[in-house]
Amino acid sequence: MLFDTIKNFFNNDIGIDLGTMNTLIYVKNKGIVLDEPSVVAINADRDKVRAVGSQAKAMMEITPENIRVVRPMRDGVIADAEVTDEMLRIFIRKATGKMKVMRPRVLVAVPSGITEVGLRAVRESALSAGARKVQLVQEPFAAAIGSGLPVNDPDGNMIIDIGGGTTEVALICLGSIVVCSSVQCAGDAMDAAIVSHLQNVHHLLIGDPTAERIKIAIGSAYPLDEPMTMEVKGLDMAQHGNRLPRAVIINSEEIRQALERPISQIIQTVRHTIDASPPELSARLIDNGITLAGGGSQLRGLDKLISEETGLAVRLGKDPLQAVVNGTGLMLEHANQLFSQPTNSLIGKGRRV
Image (cartoon, rainbow, N blue to C red; front, side):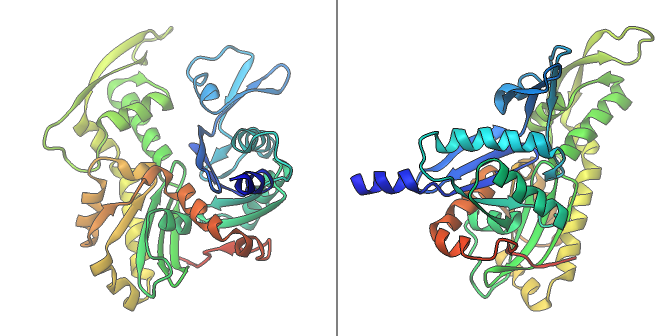
């Protein structure tokens, strides 16, 4: 007992899912200790961080002029390095505590389509936030591990990770990605499609947080047996001059139609990845099927639609919202081997199509 306490005092390896929508942190031997929105509120007059995570997100819809609320991650990559550094520093401090003797070793999950510039930005942000060593892993590889797929088997296993900014599709075999694709179309694109629909059809102006609530409440990718309705409040765009608040009733079928374009982009990426896969491994998908992960994977009927479009069995993986960070946590069980690899390596890297 005392030995474990001393060991944890010195050893605090952590895994990070640095997502467009949310940041999750896994501490070795503890599990997931942080799950916060990737949002930062800044005092515009003093250019200082006022709040991060849930507190900052609560300021998104109603903010005074001197508060600027930003999301420093866009499409799965760092859009504002300085703000990301500060956000990560606060999150890491929350996750590991202030009394650690050594700075943590950090494993960060990144999109498969990230550029070399993006990789450097992630490493530098993690180091600037207090990491003593940084290793990177591709998100779909971590998601596959977190979903319980046998990634080390000589078999073909496909994962679709639908996050906030990107959708990642990967075929994995023998501990590495054989072929992968990514598209900047995921949860954010779905929200944008709903915002556009409300503007064009109902002449109602709403924000992204409201669009996200609509998606969760009545959104679907496949026609529902029992349609649902929802009241939505926003600003009346039909009025000339000053806009006034107005409420409208919308239904699940119109939202399904509004989501058709981003959903079709995701399905096209899946089919493209299967088509580019080695025939021996893609044939194994007939038996193994496809596993879904990520927040966007929970959209009603998405598994059924992808199954119809591909002819393959599609299932929602274990803990889809936490699959990536759980994958990093499982990888941390072999931390010494993990962090002994060259710092410029990218775990799980495979052929992109």
